[in-house]
Image (tube, rainbow, N blue to C red; front, top):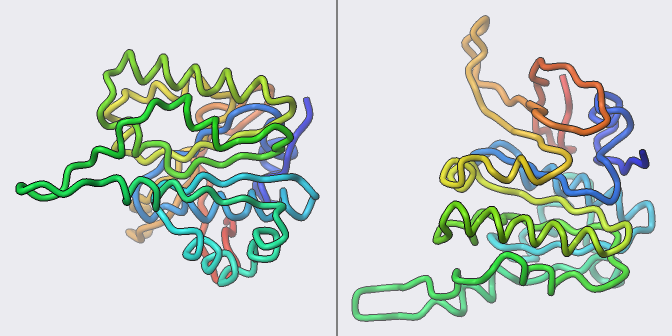
Length: 232
């Protein structure tokens, strides 16, 4: 099975050479667990390899993502400027649709169907990242979420060898009963927890699912350094 690098060499070694190419990967985690940093590693390596990439940013402005990538030494700016990386301003578009009422703000802009996110992905795209897909799930019933999520996966699977990475926050995962994990080929859970031996708060990766891959059930400890993700 063809693989695509995660952009983190130590992680590639542990998962048989990288994520499954042409499939959908799900990254979940709470705030501060490093989800966006994982996406930057992935996009940076994909751009280095000459792949055409799309990032659908639902919670951050492109400028903030590019600034973070430069701080980590994983600069995406030059790829964004030359058109190899497209960053869709979903966050900005969503914010502009929020309407004001006498009771405050009403999130009218959140009511979209998940399959329409594929409209951001043109033919010929090699890698697409949607960060965070969870913002579009909060008003869906469980059945609607499963149907729409499966439909989005199917549409992207018809785009040739396009590899997709979906980021989803823990709140949305719990509200949808972790159903997203059933639809994807690979799944990584990022966690922050107390080490029972040292009492220190540490970051961990659990890999509940990665098809055609021999995996250890033990969590992998990692740190977020000035140069990005470092496995321990």
